[in-house]
Length: 350
Image (cartoon, rainbow, N blue to C red; front, top):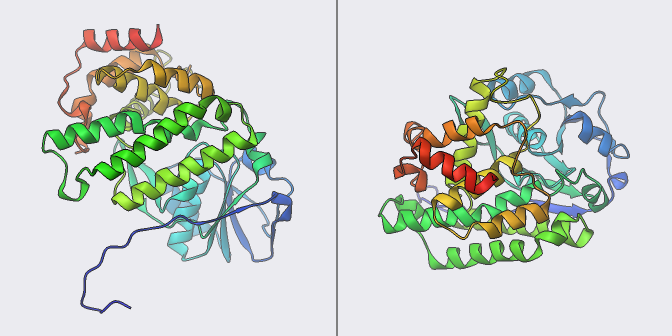
């Protein structure tokens, strides 16, 4: 074991993953179940000792802290997508309880990570929480999830396309932090994950067991690569900053019919849109990424987002990045004028 007076750096690892029908799960401990209504219906055969599941609605620190105060149990279950599982990670960490993650669709990589995304002061922040002790995957449930949602987590692998460009550009500019230096090995591994996704996007988008098992593998390898690097620069760059900024814009303008029509937004849809916009601004061959999104059945034209909202977000993106002190990307120094914003939007959406 380590000496008490020595410093050390821990490399995290993936949680244990069990593939089995949810009907095989029999939990006798008193459970805190954090979920959503559609997700709870999707796992109707699961046998968990819970009186009433808690339906999660908000993703602020206050929302999660309030839930933590009101629930009691011996084990925490997060059932559903990113919101439910992120909340479960927060609650389990706060109450020092074991955590079981039960993803009902591959909409995000949250069921694999040890941090919880919360919205604070207009930006997403990742709070240290805990990774699940066990992840239970029922491939039949994943395959039968709604087509528009079941593979939207692939956007967090496709984002390597723009994030890696940003990370490499930051290295050229001498703008990477000392603990975020670029390594050729990380570039090679990330590029392989990206190319594998591009080559298999149609199979994944069809929702076949083979395709979704591959997506699960890609998400696992993407998360472990981030752990090995000690940061997420390999898959989080300007495309995610665009997402944080436009989510803040839409939240601030809630109720404005010119901005949103109230339709629900998926993380993968916004990331997909961000990838295309940033790839154009990076002068990348972006049409291959659009083709991949179409094969994956990820809608990069979410109806809840108007062109006006996209344009305003692009125009203000460099100020947003500076305000929140986000790492160097194409959005750091590129001043996007109204004309550049409109031409970029036309390129991607027309």
